[in-house]
Length: 132
Ligand code: T46
Image (cartoon, rainbow, N blue to C red; front, side, top):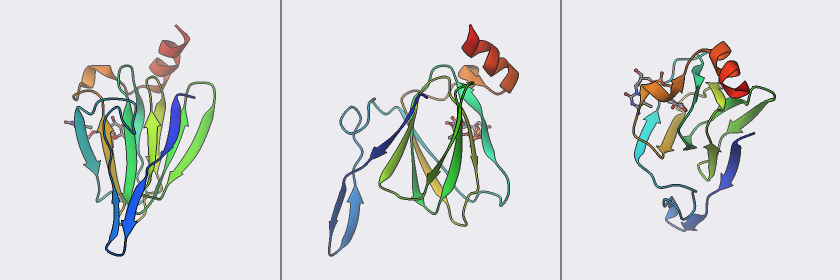
């Protein structure tokens, strides 16, 4: 499975907590894009696609949600509920996000600019592409 959970170092003191993410330091790529997902609609899943050419780190900075990760052979579910845990997802992994808690905020760091052409949004096409 082309995913990995990364523990992020927390700098904490009496004032609170701080986490720093640096490209090619505590994550494996240079960051070209940041986006965040919030105000999610209760009961509605997102994602349902794979990327042919994208690596991302996802951090749930508030609340919680679940990721279904699927490499075409195996499916695993990962829950993100801590701001000090990064979920790395590499190429050719189908993902679905669901069970968003109220107030969930997902921050996503990506190694490429947005390119709709490298999305696979059809599951049958995904299965065909990973076989070839
Ligand atoms: C992913 C999961 C975790 C842009 O214009 N620029 C961007 O950088 C992104 C990410 C999206 N968009 C547009 C494309 C769609 O019209 O925003 C709209 C919503 O995107 P999408 O339906 O792909 O969002 P999710 O939540 O299903 O998936 C997103 C990322 O697209 C995807 O790469 O891995 O979050």
